[in-house]
Image 1 (cartoon, helix red, strand yellow):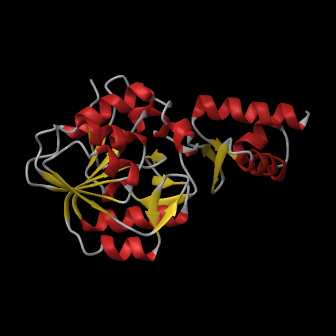
Image 2: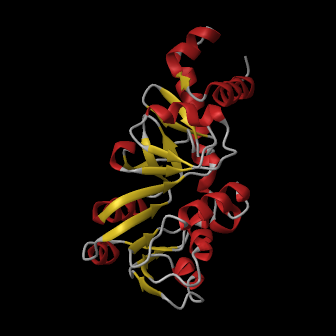
Length: 253
């Protein structure tokens, strides 16, 4: 079997099953496990999957650049943003993560809302300029250009001085076993720091993130409180997450 044929079979199986176990796949094809692992390594290098111990999981489509991500699951994100905006109460201190869904969330907040919004995203801060009752605190630091958010020790030190009522977290992967993940080490560290300071952490989960895994762990699903999804989210994506210790909001079933 040609390498291209093996890789096509691997990707097809990953799409159907949601995971690949290298040992089982090598036995199925009558090939060495080393051959399958090499194929997985090359496919991971192309960004087509995420390698994990013993095999591979789907790579997150949410790892694309910010302009591209705006058009991914746009309907999901609009609905999730509306649900999340309704969770913000008068007088609260709320941290909004960076990302396309949180930008929508900021715009969806009632114009009459009186609250404090903390963010390390200049895009989110700008989206709140026409909310006269919202005090905006922008966290400084080195800008991670891929997501246009502040990262590094300056950002983490500033975050450590603020306790928030809510944290709306954005990630690139939401997996029942591997938890919440993202594609950059420093961005993951910032998200962990924000989570530690929040009384309640709410994860915004558009469908391309569900069941996907990225390279860097943020926190486990047992360390957050709520996962907000779209009512139209496919049941097969949600089913594995229902066993996790997190409340799921937005689903119709």
